[in-house]
Amino acid sequence: MSTLANSSPIHREPELLGQTVVVIGGSSGIGLETARRARAEGAKVILTGRNAERLQQAASEVNALSTAAFDATDPVALDRFFRELPKIDHVMVTAGRPYYGLLADMDLAKIRDLIGEHLAQALYVARNAANKVRPGGTLIFMGGTGGRRPAIGMSITGAVTAALPALTANLAIEIAPVRVNLIAAGFVDTPLSAELLGDQLEKRRNQLSTTLPIGRVVGPADVAALAVHIMTNTALTGATYDIDGGQQFVAA
Image (cartoon, rainbow, N blue to C red; front, side, top):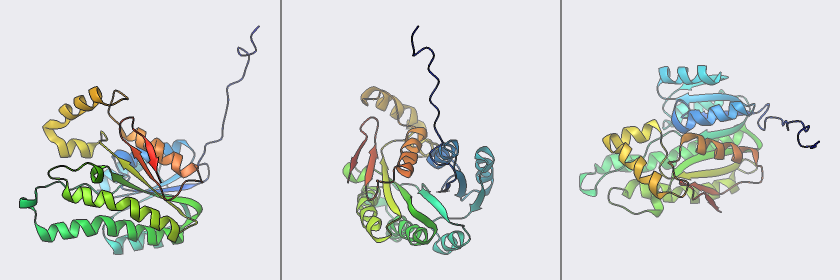
């Protein structure tokens, strides 16, 4: 008789058991999927989002410890949110959206605000997280691959995504022992992608499904799995992790 037939299934402890994960922008898409994954690994989750109704729906789904509805680009609101937090273990920042537009059509005042808004948000969160995240915990930012793929209409998004790896590497040194990492994703099939692409969404999905090595588009669950891996692997800091349809690698 085979010994394999009588072997017991392997059981393991949830990897985030007893830890608290804050997801800024956790009411849908990648943020909500990360909250689901963290809960499945035993974490308590705290969610934030702009839309109070959608946030409450998400909170009910993952049995969130608490929620806070505010604009994550508002430094005053961010400071107040972090002040009221207990000690936590991980922060995932997915709030925000890319900006696409032609140079000739840009409102320069708005563009100045947009560039500052994305980078300043990261700095605001890092300053607050330094005092709230337990040693060895991590702060994870979401970025993109636009900085490495020049194209018409990508000037602002490209500039911001190119700056985030350098910001991440420097913050990892400055606020250690809190770890700081960045996930740079290409196309991810989320509600935001659907909103941005409109009637071009299905065409984009089909294009990627036939050209990417994995034979499908990347979804929120793929990014969430990477985020939880970064949380649990305490040797990881100061790095940018690309997840782009089967071309997943780290550039330190």
